[in-house]
Amino acid sequence: MFYIKVKDINERSALINYLFKNEVNAVFHYVPLHNSEAGLRYGRFNGDERYTCSESDRLIRLPLFFGIKADEVNYITNLVKQFYINPKSLNCF
Image 1: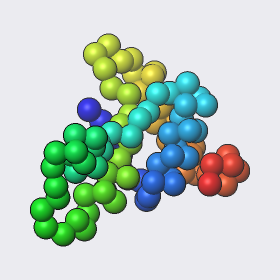
Image 2 (image 1 turned 180 degrees about the vertical axis):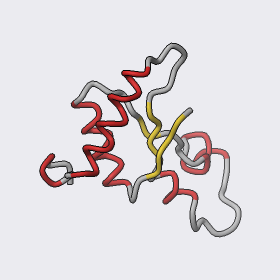
Image 3 (image 1 turned 135 degrees about the horizontal axis):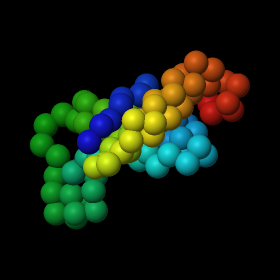
């Protein structure tokens, strides 16, 4: 797994959408257990929830699989760089 952390959920959504428009399937990764369907039904959160949800909202999992080629990795990383070089011109925010 290869992931990056972004500023917040809005930036995460914008970057995922930008990558998707460029044929890259990046996804958000973890839903905190206490917010999952089973967690809501059977569990409970113990203690103060100060970081779990906000950190989960910041994670994007980038494509990584056996056989990924160097040019595919370069394409993905260049898209991420381009997103951050000029996000306003890309109408992402």
